[in-house]
Image (tube, rainbow over all chains, first blue to last red; front, side, top):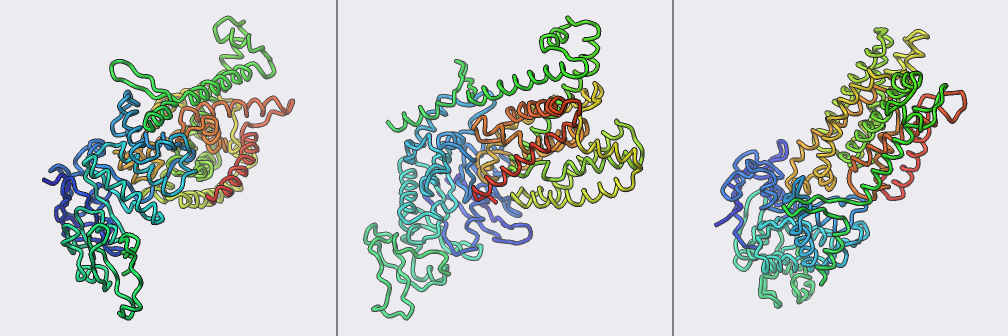
Length: 283
Length: 354
């Protein structure tokens, strides 16, 4: 059973077609990660899945119904999105920003119920920002700010949560923190997560379902252990690499070949897979 | 433990709940600010009604308003000064709400009707009527209204349609304002001396000679659009986080933006038609209101009362502070607003937004 699917969609900005006849199904209760080189259409696909972009052909289905035909608020109670760039209003506190995630559950006469209050508190605790509730969002570091935005998306209490490059602009420590948080949300709260990530090794480590895209098409999808092979890395990213087992987790670890191919001059692959990032930008 | 602490922090903004499951969120500071500004606006309004060639103490003004005045006081208050002051209050509120909506949608304090050429657009409309058709005050107001609406449409089509990108809107507005300024100069040079004087006086923005016939159309428009803008305050706050974030929360982004842009254009146009282009109220009132309430977002209610208060204070300064020389209110708001704009540009620059 898949609640969120795309049926042979054509995705285009104005007349620039990004993807044609693209079909994808997000397995329920999965942590799905979409990877691919720049401009492969992965963010565009995520925008279509979150009804931000209306397909010019085909349709996106949420619970069997065309997503555009559903009331906006109803969708917002089922499917959350962490956009790539959001603007924190000047001077807003962490608590107030997270509380905005309750908007689709509220109305003119139901502005702030006890349930809202409880869920906002829980969302801040789950993302480790409860101690910052009274601080201004402007004062926070990039990693803290991203946690606050995730807390807001959590407060929306949607069974499906889409994240558009949640780790961009963060340093490695905060990238891992955010991904650990996503994995925890997936495991403990049973939410279906869909994230676009740049780092193939991080994707292989955290995803339960991997979708690799190139040129607006799906090159491969499935469990990372089945999908990530040297052939796929070369085909999708144009990078020649060896794929070994991650000594930490046993998931595939992509080690790009050294420039001249000699083992002696090969860059030393760090034991921790995530640290030796093969980024999608490599193509 | 942490969750409990966080809940307490959020509780700082009070919520009023009924057993039936209804709840309304109240920000005590914002409520206080609105009440305070309302008191200032009404207090100064009473003083204004009492000042002039036939001075009256505030107590006498209130007594007359309640129906206990002499026949002469009745005449002075009801037929001469009250409509003017009511027009001032509504014009201030309308300009300020228009400004608050524009600034919020543009996500930029400079995305204000003042900066976007609305004053010039209304002026071109009014001057066309005065200079080319020799029209009276009503025809002039109609011309100003048409000019304001046309400017709104032009700004929308050129910069707005696919979402606003901060300074693009401001730059388009400045371009439109410059072109319209050219048209204004052309019209003034074509006018004879009497018409030119009328035209320049109109463009300064003045409340002189405003009566009940100016008040009723203004009331009709503001009584519909200000509550509408208040009702859209919550979605508008969400929209300030970006189109994507607002979509994600279930806001119908295009519809919200279209409704609010339309309201802002109409409010600005009707206020300008009533009193001429009184500059800088739209720019400064929302910013001052926000600093007073310290709450993010458009602050529509606080902006409205701030605009009303600003305009009656400016009118009081214009009519009383210079002895016998009564200045048009637009001169005062222009001078005060200019200083404010410079300060805003400096702080924006320091914050790295310019």
